[in-house]
Every structure is written in structure tokens, then in C-alpha cells.
Image (cartoon, rainbow, N blue to C red; front, side, top):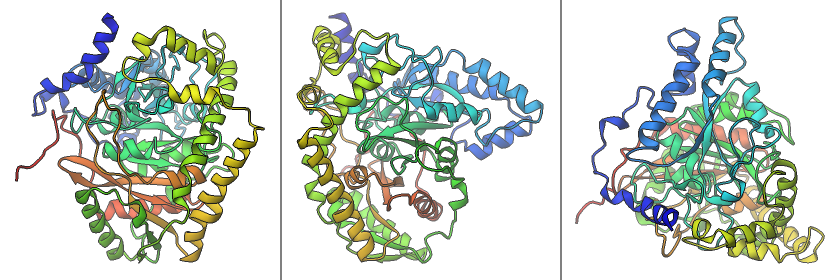
Length: 517
């Protein structure tokens, strides 16, 4: 019972946090970009080891102590020696990439073959150390990145309960939004978005099945990029759905997202240097569809969106308003059928290859483990999605095959492809979603309308970039494009970011800045 009491009281600690930021929240590398850090490293004014140590101290100061945002679930014990070796390489004239010596935080559902664990936030996988790196980790190491640690997440990538609290895991507790500590950080890449927003690392890696990169990025005032499914390898990532899963960058600037994507791409499709797409005049001549059937429903957010549209037009974009995505209302049921069935199948494969030493070997074992450890694993919400997935058939089941066909039909052929082709569009825009909701362990998440589903189900690229603030809470602008339009989306997002910079660092306030009337 002692552990359960800790988990209940930890989220409520925000109620006693002072409204004004303390001196400990200021940091020498606040808002540092990859280019700025690389220039200092190359000029000898900074070492990779000193940079990694500074970020570790930053994590100790504000992540593990007040305001205690709990974004980092584990620090890599080998980060400093790795950074020192990369310093030695640099002195010999070898610089692997723009990420050489740069600290990166990754979500704790991405396998690393080192002294860190890979748990997806679950106690069932505590102590499990995968036999090899996930492919994207191999890519990051080859690029000279320093894997600084693992981020907390919504446990099992938020695919356990129908009434979960995003940002919470049994292993990591609650990750809190750094803009207002009583607000939710969204999920499931909550820890990564919070860590990058709070300057706990230079850049981060999240994963998404439906909204898990773009939603926390929007809620935490950072850039989140969900690539075309298959552009980044899913190898070694705890799965939900092989039809929709992808890893992607979470950064403070679009430029940094392009650099990170260039490093990790090269899975099922050819890699590219995505920095070549960055063009401050990139909106000129673009045809952008305004998706009003995915407005946030929040008046202040939607007012910011109208301002963003004026910026797009002023920068030379032609707006097609409205541009309705047909059949988007038909995606919910078939998507869930696909996710449930693929989760069951994918979990068995992942556990066999990357967690063979774990006490659980299948989804049914996970369900039993959670029941046996309910006081610690299920103090706030249950495992309804696990139970529904366990009852599904295999990947040859007709219900699954029909649902998969409907997902492809309604999301692609008779959905996004129709509106993009009909209006000859280069991209679609909408608010990513409204501002962060209050964390509520009684009622669970209340996120409101979001714009993630069409691109998620289709497997198409989606980027969110800071659009502005509502009562001190960030909200994002989303760009969605056709399959493999990752480069053009970066171009449009970059041009908007340069024309209307909205990113500002968090102040770790107790609650939102709600003006009196």
C-alpha cells in the first residue's frame, strides 16, 4: 500500500508548487539548437562530455526535484564515457554527422542493448535489457549521438485502458506539463515532449500510432514530426500496430527535426537529407487545404488558427477553404479493430525477441501480471484494451482483414487522397488540438478534438509546429500531406515557423494563466 500512496500523491504535488519559476529552472543551454551546439563543439569551446554532464545536472535539478516533471525514467550510466570517446574522435578530425556528441533522449519503448532497461513503463519488463539495439538506435549511435537516457511515457504507449491518464506509467509515475504542472502532457510520447520543452536534452525521439507524437508536442510547445509509416524502421520498438507505428523526432525547431529525421530514416524506404527542404520562402505557391471539420472546438485555439491562416496566405500560400476530408467519420471502429488485433500479434513477437528474459511471454501473461500487481499497476485505471485485444483472432481473421481494408479505403483511397487530388493540394492544415486538459485520475483523459487520426490511419506524414498560447498553454498547427511528402511538410512547417515564431520555454507554473473577467 505504501507504493500506491506514493503514486496517488505524486500528481497532486503540483498543487503546492509556487507559481513563479525558481532559479533552478534557468539553464546555460536553454533553447540551444543543434547548429549552435555543433558550432561550440567544433570550435573547442565545449566538449560532448561537458554537454552531457550539464544535461544530466539539469535533469537532476528540475526533473527529479522541484518542480519534478518526471520526464526522464532512466539515465544512461555510460553517457559520459560515450561522450568522452566522441570528443576523442572529434580531436582526430572525425565528425560523423551534425549529431556528433549531441545528447538525445528516447522514449522507453525503444530497445537499447546497453545497461538501460526497455520497459514501456511497465513493471512487467523492469530489469529487461534487450539483446540488441533497435534499428533507429543503431542509426543514432552511428551518427555520433549520445543516448542520454530514456523518457517516461503513457504506459504501453497508451494502449492499455479506455480511460487512461496520459503521461502516467507504473514505473515512471506521472509526467507533468512544464507550462502548468496540473495540466496533462498528453500521450503517449509525453516524457519526450516534456523533456525537450524543458531543455533536458538537445533533441528527442518519440513514437506514434495515433497522435502520440503530435499531441504531446502540441501540448508542450515543441515540434513533433510523425513520418510516413515505413520511412523510419519499427524494428526494436515495443509495438501497437505495424500498420500505423512509427518513431519520429520531437525537437524545439523544425530545423532540428529535419536533422534528426535525416539520421534515423532509412528503414523500409530510402534515406534523404531532409535539411535540404528547409526554405523560409517555402509557402510561396503552395496550395494548402483548410480542414474545418477538424477544428479544435476551443474558441481561443481556433482564433489562433485563423491568425495562422493569415500568415500562410501572407507568405504566398493559396488557401482552399474549406477542404473536407471525406469519410473521416468512418475510421474509428475499423482502426480500433486493427490496433487490437495487431497489438496481440506484435506483442508476442516483440517479447520473444527483445524481452526473452521477462516473466511474461504473451499478452495473456501481461494481463495476469497486471492483475497480480494491481495495487501498483492499476491504481487508477484498468486494462480494458488488453483484455479486448486478447480476445481477438490472428492476422488471418476475417474481421481484421475487413477492418484493415476499410482503414485503407476510408483513410487513403476515399479519404486523404480524394481531398488532396480534388483540390490539387500540397498539404492540409488544422489545429493539432486544443490546450492541455487538467490531469484527472478520477475521470481519466479529456483531450477533446484532435487532428491525428486521418494521417495516422493512412500512414501519411504529419508535423505540428507551435502556433501560440492559450492562457499560457501551448497549442500547435498541424500540416498533413500525402504518402512520402515528408520533405514538403518540413518545408511548409519551417516557412510558417520562420514567419510566425511562437515557441517560448516553460516557466513551470502551478496552474494555467487564466485571466479574470
